[in-house]
Length: 72
Image (cartoon, rainbow, N blue to C red; front, side, top):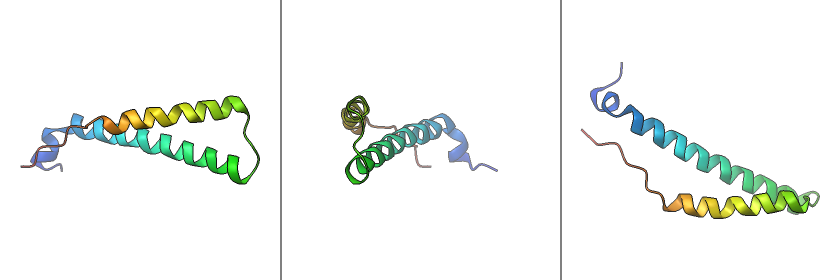
């Protein structure tokens, strides 16, 4: 059973999970791509351009504030 405070704001909780999940996924893609580029073999220029475009997106996402769930 859900407790009353958790049942009160499920859309906010799902939005937080989605938002932070996207951020973690983008960070993992950047780290894995640049790591393989440095340690293994160089990636094509088109792939590196896409990876370098993700970094400003992550910076913009870091400025977005997600509404916190109200404590009971």
